[in-house]
Image (cartoon, rainbow, N blue to C red):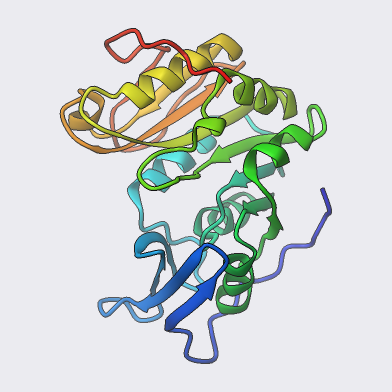
Length: 256
């Protein structure tokens, strides 16, 4: 990993709205008509990030606040190092860098998207162009304090980033007591979340999930945030959370 001093984020001095070609298709930067200086980054027509350049403390998406709540509650060193698998507009990495004066590496597969985000938003974090699984396996043992996985292929996490073997690679890269946090999109029944929690429980001593009651109860589609660590987990967020590896049903863990 290369080191890079964090820069103070700047507000854009030119018009950045528009549609841009990227390696995996196209991205659009859409100005928020209700908030001066706010932008939605859409990747292949899917809203992926909400960014207010120059205001990294803004986290518009609920699930990002839940991820931050697990990090807030963890006994992490100050400063700490966080790797974010899935960069998009770098809104969460920028928040973490601002909130905890931490070193953040955002990993993005699409080089064109990474270049667009650097140019349009100038996030105060390092962006590495790499495939998330390969990047995680290449991390030195005990070299990072937090790993955030927020990678999607359509509505789901790529299978290669949801297996027991991948979780072992993440565990190996974390410092003792480090935290792995993942965003999962799931449907009624929570098959994805339950399978991934089962896999995480094979690797980490403690696991937890946070989401609105309707989603945790398996009645609605939405985001579930999973956390895992060898240290006890806590949560300072505003939605229900459940410690433990079970979400009302046994699902076999995914394996390579």
